[in-house]
Image 1 (cartoon, rainbow, N blue to C red):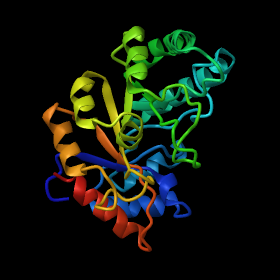
Image 2: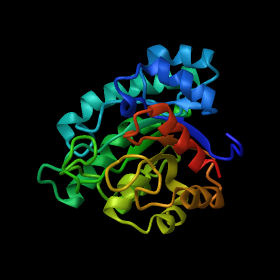
Image 3: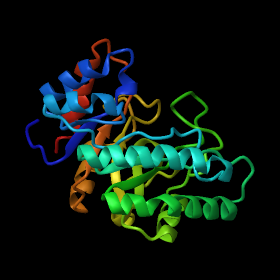
Image 4: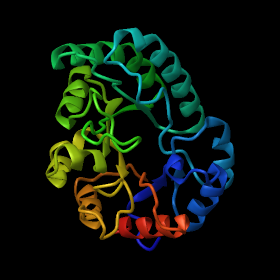
Length: 258
């Protein structure tokens, strides 16, 4: 990378079936700082390559705090992952709302707030930030959208964080999902700057390369993040369509290196 003002990371699932450690070697060669949302067992091998894990995975998007009967499983996994993250030096752990299943906004928000409050104290103690990811509910294609997902609104997700009232509960601001559900992304970056703890990329439509084939201006989005003083990571989470996936990643990295 030429400028290096944006700390970049990559999400492995998009590059399947490439093994995570092979992707990590390419990431290191491209100047990335992290491979994220990967098994804690390989974190020591990332460190050997000069990489970190910018954000740790947890219970997956299909379950979460909107549904009270799912709290126990989510709490168990989150506590374990917070402990592992703190020991390794990772300061972010992802979490999700799960699905609405007929809940009103009011009931779902209340459940989210109460459920996360039961674990956020442990996150505070370990100096780890929980990042609630907003996902789009409009696209009915596997891993490109999540119909009936409860936190499909950035405003609703921010309101949950506001009610929890902890510096250790913020949002994962996925530019792809925000564009699909809301648009006006730069305005939302500015509006919600105090709550953005991690960022993901992908092209709209399609969740593919972040080049001229899609509608978002990624250099402008990166400059907007710098303008608000964002110092966290930007994780490349697009699904490559190019025959050479590493070249595709290199192109995305270059476009975000403003």
